[in-house]
Length: 368
Image (cartoon, rainbow, N blue to C red; front, side, top):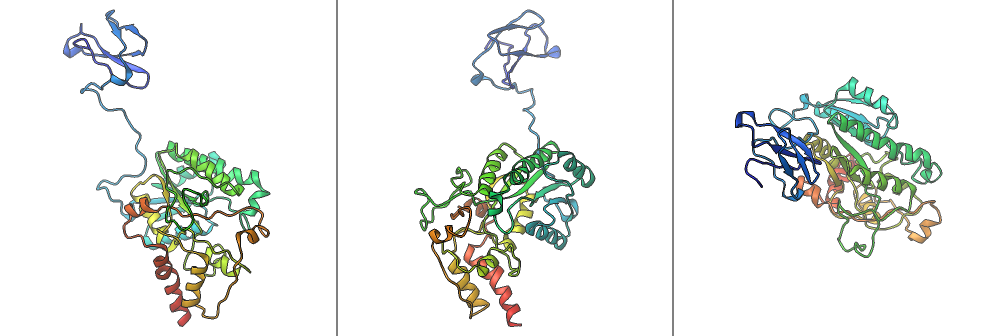
């Protein structure tokens, strides 16, 4: 490169320092990346290989928009936080509100519809949050089979709505904690049942057996382009509230028959507080939001029998038999929770968490 010239690859521009100007008069003139161009002094500037561009030491690095609330000391106190939560009437959304109350974190529930951009923008203005949580979405009532006959409604919320919220948050520089699903995978030849080989965050979803899962896989792929989104893959959520109809445990105790397949699952009593901590740390990207390891339907019901109700009984049936009583196939898989475990080393394996957070607390209640 000739003396006095400096090139920098900034988008589709290069910068030229004219050698005819003194140091006190140095100006950087942008030129498009053509083979030859001229500055105001008619200097000929050749465009080098873009791969060889380096930024002049006196130039600041390219600006990168920072996402999320940042405290002065790097650790946000509850009084500095203000959460905006979508999904007030949902199970996870309701639990989030209770957690915020117990931790002294100010929060508000969003009143806007996810697919209505102006209403979301109005919420952000009214609340002025430090973080946004999305626990809203269509899962179907009584189950995901509902989505098979309500496809447009499912797309409107699970795809269009979620993307709209992510985009609005990005414009405001806000981190969005998005509770998604891990029911977008199924055991395959590379991840055989019982092998202990789980699907990782970067793996491509391979299960679209249900329309619900199809929309979730679609929106997850699109959200990868939003650097402000933290996608949490929740699976078969269980909590210590054994009477809640949304609780996976409660569901299988009420079924006439259950399949018996090991799966990754999410213990909400342990993991929802972790999601709040993830917001405090402004974590983004995809996380398999499950406890490490797998547990089968029978193992869960055996724990219930051993800790809560010794007289409880159940019956099993095969996947083939199950397919005759459901509309859409169900996902069965193991997710690799190593990424989450590395961030939160205290995270318990699934069976230990079930006993500690779900069955032992209820054992005391039953004994009383």
